[in-house]
Amino acid sequence: MKEETLIHIITHPKCLEHSGGPGHPESPERIGAIMTMLNAAPWKDRLTWHEAPEATGEQLERVHSSLYIEMIRSSSEAGGRQLDPDTATNHASWEAALRAAGAAVLACELAIDRGEGAFAAVRPPGHHALAGRAMGFCLFSNVVVAVREMLERPEAGQILIVDWDVHHGNGTQALVEDDPRIRFISLHQWPHYPGTGAEEERGVGNVWNLPRPPGLAPEQYRDDLLAAIGEATSDWVPDLVVVSAGFDSMAGDPLAGFTLREEDYAAITAELLSFGKPLAGVLEGGYSLENLRSGVAAFLEALS
Ligand SMILES: [Zn+2]
Image 1: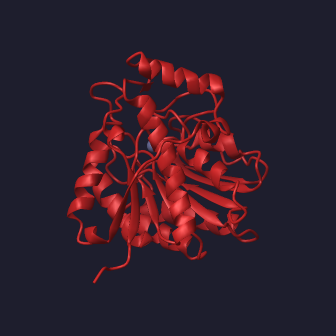
Image 2: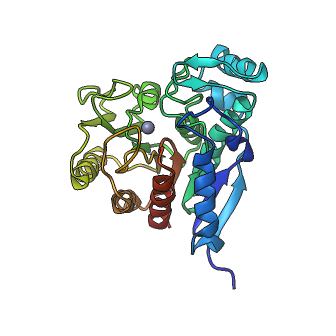
C-alpha cells in the first residue's frame, strides 16, 4: 500500500557543484547535509523527489535585467569570477542558479496544483539578489522569480512571502515593495548584514520588517513573527504562501545570533498552514550543518 505523499522535494546535482570559493560558509555540504537527513528520515518513503528544471529566460527577465543575467552566464562560462566580497561564480554557477530559480517555480506549482507541501532544497540562495546585482551569496532571486511566475496564474492573485532567514531579505523587498499583490514579512537580526530592513521600510504598505537584536529568547522572535503574520493577513488572505526558509536564525549559527529552535519553525509553519492555502518553502541561508538537518526536518514535518 502506497502512503500519501508527505512532501515534494525539488533539487539538482548542479546545486552541489556551485561554489563561492574554498572555505565559503555557503558550501555544497549544506545541500549534502539536507540530503543525508532526508534519506535517513523515518518518513523518507513519503517524499516525492523532483529534478529541478532550469528557470526560463522569460521567468528570469521578469525580475532581473538581461544585462545582469548575461553577466552571470558569461562569468560562469569563463570559469567563475568574484562578484562582490561575499559572492562568486564558478563553472557550475550558471546552471545551479538556473536550477535553483526553476526549483522555486516548481515548488510553487506543485503546492498549488497538488495541494501538497513542497520544498526547494537548492543553492545558491536568493533573497539578497537585486535586479542587477549579486550579493550575499545570492545570484538570482529564486523566490521572486517563482512568485512572479505564479502571479501569471488566475488562482494566485495574492502571495505572501515570509522570510525567517536571520538576514534581511533586501533583494526580495526591493523586487516586491511596489506590488500590492505581494506581501513580504522579514524577521532579521539588526544591526547586521546587509544593513537594510528598518521597521519604517513599508513599501506600498505591503512590507513588514522585524529587525531584532541577537540573543533574545526564542519565544520572542517567534511570537513577533506570528504577530506580524496576523497583522499582514487580518484584511487580506493569500492564495499562496512562500517561505524563504533560512536556518541561520537557529541557535548556534556561526554567522548570527538568533536563538530559534526546531519547534519555533514548526509553530510558524503551522500558523501559515492555518490559511488552508498552498505553501512552498525555498532554502535560503543556514550555516550549521547540524541545524540545517534538524531545522529542515522540523519544517517539513510541520508542512506535512
Ligand atoms: Zn541568512
